[in-house]
Structure formats: C-alpha cells, structure tokens
Image (cartoon, rainbow, N blue to C red; front, side, top):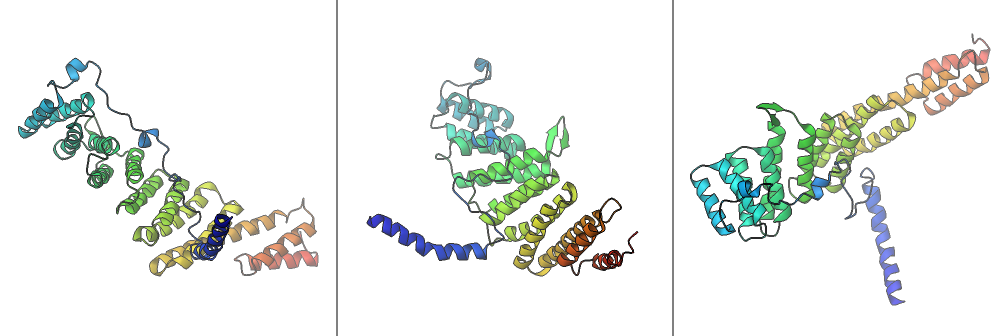
Length: 341
C-alpha cells in the first residue's frame, strides 16, 4: 500500500512539469522512447544485423598465407611497410576471416579499414570495414574514434560518388544509408545532428518529401536547441510546402500545413521567420483558393440558388478578408437579388 501511495504522489508531482513541457514544445510533436526507431530511415536489415565474416570459398587459395594469426599479422605488417597495400588488405581480411576471435583480429580489422581509406582510397570498402570494426569489435577498439572514422568516410562518399568501370555516378540512396548507419551506431555523437540533416537533404534529392519531413521532425525532437534543429525547422517548412505542390491541395493537408507553419513562425526569428512567413502566406492563399473553389462548385445551373447562397455565406464567414471575398460578396448579392443567370 505505501508503494502505491508513493507512486501516486510521484505521478501527481510530475503532471505540471509534463504539461509545461508539452506547452513549451508544441511544435515538437511526439514523445521519445528508448525503443523508438528513426522515422524516415530505411529499414535495411544490414544496418542492424550485419553479416559476420567467414573464410571465403576455396580458402586454400584465398585464405591466409601463414599458419597462425600472429605470424599472419606480422606478414601483413611487412606488406604494409613495403607499400603492397592491396595485397596487405587482402591478407588482413583473410586473418579476420580465419581467426576472428584471435588477439590480432581487432587490430587487423582496424589496419584493414585504415589501409582501404588512406592508401587505397576505396571509400566504399573502407566504410564497410570501419562499420565491421564497430559492429564486431566494439569492445576491443576505440569505439569513439571508429564511429568518427565511419562518419568521416560517409562524408567523403557523398562527395566522391560511386565508381563503376572507372566512371563516377551519384548514388544518393547508398550514401544516405551510410549516414543512417552512422547515426544508428552513435546517436549521441557531436556530428549526429549534422548527419541527420544530411540524411533529410538526401531524401529531398530522391524527391521523397514525406520521408524528409520525418527526419527533420525527428532531428528537432532529438537535438533541440542546436543550429541543425533550427535549420531543420525551415527546411521542414519548405518540404511541407513541396508536399502540397506534389501531392495535391486537399483541404486537410493544407490546414495541417498552415497549422505547422503558424507554430514554426512563432518559434523562429530573423531571416528564418521571414522565410516561413512567406510560406505561411502562400499556404493560407491555397486554403482560401480551395474554399472559394468549393463555394463556386454550388453556383451552377444544376444546383439550387439556395445551395450557392449558403456556400458563399460559409466562405465569407470563414474568410471575410480572403482574396476572393469581394468576388464572393458581389456574387452573393446578385443571387439574393434574384439576378443569377
């Protein structure tokens, strides 16, 4: 019984704080829980359940050249010293595959990732190997340095693109997933807000406006008060306007957008507020246009005069200062005088 009373008192004490927090952060909709996923990220199994390395097929040819992990690691270091980087990378990988729980395996994996990044300049493979180090040797490595390297290579991938037959191609989806992998592995890193901003930008490059909005909103929720969250607010506003343009002007979506922009305007300042105010004016105009179009729908030969009068009166009641208000008043006056054609 005492435990129940204490729990009840704790709940009552927390209620004002919860209400205050909700009011202060109305624009940051949704509570966060430890089990939450990241909305707007791809649900790629490889991101959370990477495949563990095993000896390759025909391992008597592709496997390690030495008989034990210590000798193999020494052999690899010799290859690196003489500048045989490509061969060293193959042999380091073979060591990890053959002796994954050996004392040398974590350092071999680290050297493999470093060699591919700094010597071979193979950034796609380097990213995969840094991620493998983080996923399978998180305790044995400097985790913070490893995830920083992961993010560093992801930023290079965004610039470099994908190489196929000596040609470079932009590969937005793969690069975006690389940044997503970074955030999933280090959500508290100093670079996490910027990484999420980049993910949302890449979503926009794919023309996936709704997914971009989810990432922007999540960024604002998780990293409130950061410069990235401030930038995300403006970009989310622009993305929401793009959704109106791309997906049609249905009434509910327009009103939701207006509501968001009103809150965003109040939460921004300076040039950001000016930009959002412009979007808000545009969104309100779209709502006005849609409402007037709906009123005119009832003003036709196949509809009764009374239905048209009611429609125009409703429009004027909701939008007395709307940009079609004067036209609506004139037509309403004609209808009431009985001069409708």
